[in-house]
Length: 140
Image (cartoon, helix red, strand yellow):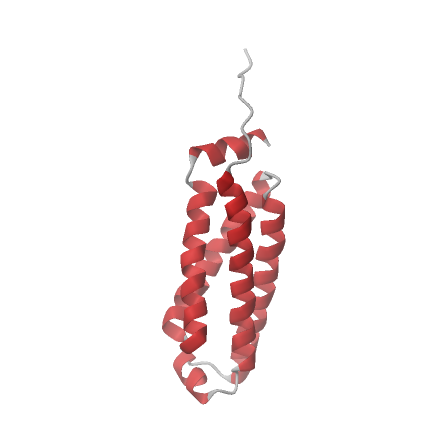
């Protein structure tokens, strides 16, 4: 006997996820750009305990990461389960980086890190929390 599933329309939370994913990716891009632009700030180097070259490397990594989040966020609205898990993994990593930024950075970089953490946690809840979201991904 085969199970009958009712067709689940894309939840509004998924559309919100795509938008939040875009915001998350843009914040990661901004954080990376700030690190690169402020690489010569002695205060930032001291606070982060990093050299200018390390700040640039971290900034480039954040930019690449932000780009990946933007790409996956764009694909998320189609309901692909693999994209869901990849997106979730990237968001978890980004939350971890944001937590580091809260303690290792200052000024606008710290604000960007805080926003990254808040948006990341909201994204993870929307991605894996609601049962309707699970049903929607299961059918696609």
